[in-house]
Image (cartoon, rainbow, N blue to C red; front, side, top):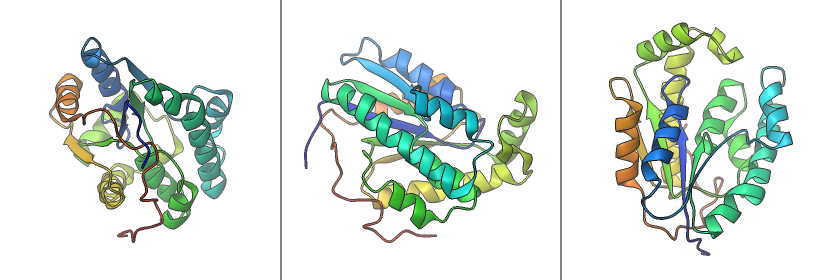
Length: 218
C-alpha cells in the first residue's frame, strides 16, 4: 500500500441536499487549520470535464458512464494525486457514489460502473449527504430543474435509496463512510461534523480493494 501525505474527502448525495454549499463551507472551515485545502468538483473544470457537464443531458447510458469515468481518471492524474502528494486536503463535490447512483438511474448496471472505476483513487473519507425525499422535492421545485433526471417525480426517493446502497458499497471497499442528514441541518453545521470526522493524513493512494473485487449488495 502506497501512502500520500494529504487527505482526500468526497461529498455525494441526491440533488438539492446542499453538497456544493457544504463543500464551500468545509473548505472555509478548514483554512488555517494546518495543511492547504483544495476544493474541486466532478465533472472537473478541464476541457473534458466541461464537455461532460455540457453534454450530460444529451449523452445517455453506458456512453455517459464511460465519459464520466474518463474525466475521473484525468482528474485523478492531473489534479487529485499531485495535490495529495503535496500534503493538501482535497474535498471533491461528487465522486464514485454519484456514479453508482446516477448511472443506475440512467439504466447502467452497477457491475459495469464498478468495472469502469476499478482503478480509481478511493477517498480517505466518503461523505454521503441525504435528506427526506419530500424535502428534496420541495427544494428542487423552488430552485428549478437542472437535469433530465429531475423530470421523474419519484427521482428523489430513488436517489435517497440508491445513495444508501452506495454507502454500503463503499464500505465493502474499505472506505470510511459518513452519512449525514441535511433535512433540518444547515450546511455550516454539516461542514463542522465532517471536519470533526476527518481522518489523519497519510491515507492510501491506491486502495488494494478494487470495486469489482468484492460482492456488492443490490
